Length: 105
Image (cartoon, rainbow, N blue to C red; front, side, top):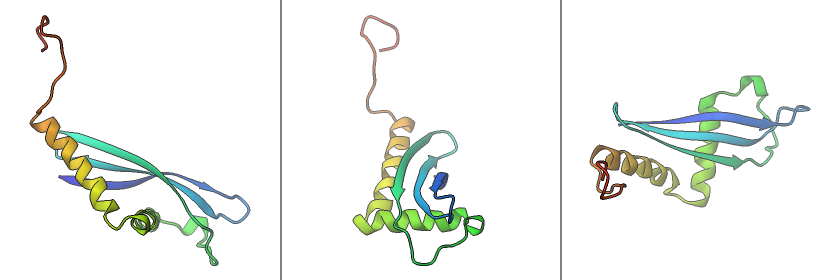
């Protein structure tokens, strides 16, 4: 299974390029089934700013993961495990929906 962290959008101040909010997604894919989680984190303004044009997705993902683990050391593992659980349920369902009087029970 592949887990991919992705930056979806950055909110920034135009005057100095300070990124104050990151919108991100975490995607799980086993080749057949997929699952997705999304989130937003706010960033405190650092003393030294990296110019906006010099930011990379890798840098931003590092900030996201650092922010998440600051509040909960297991946050990254928890998100990734939740995606794996959803895909496992898709692969081998243990629950279903439907009406007993239809053919899709």
